[in-house]
Image 1 (cartoon, rainbow, N blue to C red):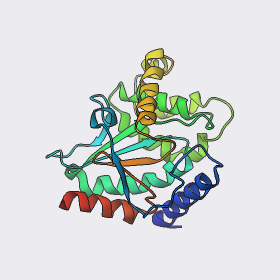
Image 2 (image 1 turned 60 degrees about the horizontal axis):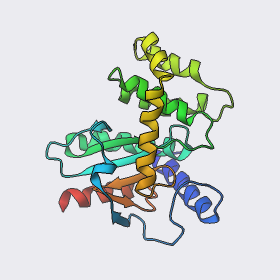
Image 3 (image 1 turned 180 degrees about the vertical axis):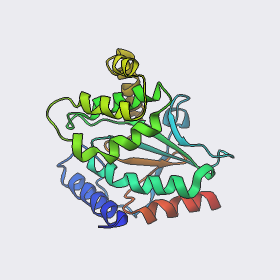
Length: 220
């Protein structure tokens, strides 16, 4: 199955389930055109000074923000598309990641704390990639996947004592909670939710939809 097909199927599934009211995640129930943008939101809430940036544009014109859950299958399906966008646009756009762990995913909040603990050692991007690329191994497990995350920290060459300490630090949990609170305040109901230049991208079903929206923003 190609990356685009996987993303398409996952996003369609999210939209269908949300419309049926089965999930607490994504999207608006009213029908919308693919790629349609929502009302503008406060940019100061959408992107904080300490928000994690996977890329930073030279001119600051275009910013893509994703609220995500590392245990969310749709987020994992979208990950290759985001990775391709990072490679394609590089410093032409800013890509920001915000935490939005969903309560129904048993290790989502712990995974977000693992990413933040890695960020404390300047390795957020590496942990972000490892969590998604290995989601099948640790995701949807009833027991805490602390040892798996310690293994990823070891792979990244982190100070393991500091990582373990930061993983359990209330300040780390508070940092994750602040991201989620910001997401809720701008209308995020589930994952993945994308904002482009301060407006939510609704019903983005494929990588092509996302690329088209970015290209339009760059051309505008």
